[in-house]
Image 1 (cartoon, rainbow, N blue to C red):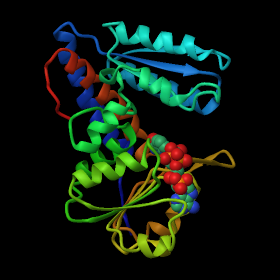
Image 2 (image 1 turned 45 degrees about the vertical axis):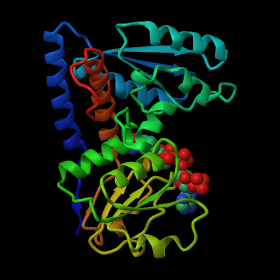
Image 3 (image 1 turned 90 degrees about the vertical axis):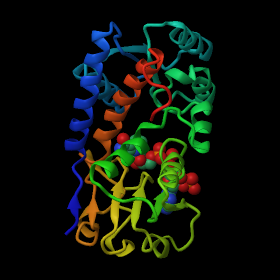
Image 4 (image 1 turned 90 degrees about the horizontal axis):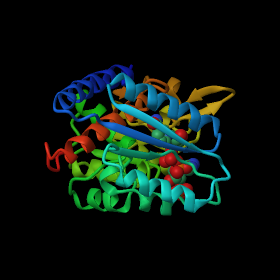
Length: 287
Ligand code: NAP
């Protein structure tokens, strides 16, 4: 039976550390502020934004949500982001994705000041991650690395396999594992003989967006299995990993819900406080 990696518990630990850092900043007259920009009425985005707002406030971070209708024109949105870039009270900016089809996501991301890009999606931060320089790292893969750290799971020298190559999860996940000295394989929808590869992985990170795609027969006995997937099936949240068949084979496994999801929010708060500290020049370039 695989050890259950309790993301909810570890997220609480991380958030408590962040809350202490916020208190220290308050004592120095700095009030970390996160602004979330939400365009349209997508129900899932509304839920995510509410979760982020609640968590930020609980940690003592000032949280503002700026809402635009789905019909907003790109120039209005970009002008507002530029306004937030200039506002010294704002430390972190997050634009909730996806955006309506008429707005180019990359243009919006590129407009954000890299030192306020707490999601780590700006090209400057992507480049920094790729050369191993200090920048903002996307919250979900950062949360996975933090979970591995909390659980004392050795990464160096291990064969880590990531399924998924999105800019948000798969690619930065692979970069972080590589930086931590794993030998990294990245798989995607065109990968052939996927299960042959997955059976060789000591650490398997699954970020596909297909419910229960990874089954027990695809997993090496004792492997660490991290399920990033969040799929709604008949109103129920499921991961990309078939927990029932994988858990008996795995050495350790994250559940869905209460696995990677809570860590993503915890890392958003961490990145926001880091942005505030960087502004105060309290730290320079520590992840
Ligand atoms: P995405 O942009 O849709 O990327 C999915 C990746 O999976 C793509 O690289 C795709 O390959 C690959 N893929 C699709 N079908 C596959 C298959 N049958 N076999 C192997 N690879 C396959 O999704 P994403 O944004 O990375 O998100 C992935 C999942 O994580 C989703 O369920 C999402 O909801 C979840 N997520 C969770 C959190 C969290 O906080 N827990 C945060 C972000 C995302 P191609 O590149 O070849 O198309």
